[in-house]
Length: 218
Image (cartoon, rainbow, N blue to C red; front, side, top):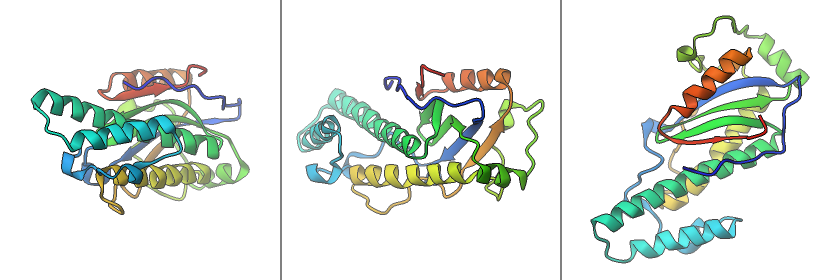
């Protein structure tokens, strides 16, 4: 489990809440790449975070030594944590860049699910008006099923695109597979209207078997 992350970016009353679902390419697991897919080159996985670099170096060193079954299991868990941390790091960076507030999100082996607050910029309001969204009596089981289309807010699309590019680059460096697709090209989103539905979705995210993060301010 990754520690909860605190954000200073608190939504205003004009912000719109969206549920976002982004799946991995061909449903490939983010968490369990085989050892031979991990880079043993310490410099190839470097980031601006010194602690992140130390974790990357420890992983690379361990791959060069003989491991018993227990050690391999520990290695797998460490790899899963590192890859999940890459995703968490990059979604926080993208959110700060695009001034988006993260409510709660979960990193699963084959997808990312998130509740995000998006500032209601005029361009986004116009874009959403092109595709009416029904928010009354919304069934949480169907949330996120809407396909990519002209009604997607531009800021949300830019946020997802930036996150995908940055996280895929770091993940591929760890796997020693530069340029390989990590995420699907499109994502699903749904405008959420109502506190009851928001709370229900947050509870659903907490019930998933993944690394759940939330902003304690929301």
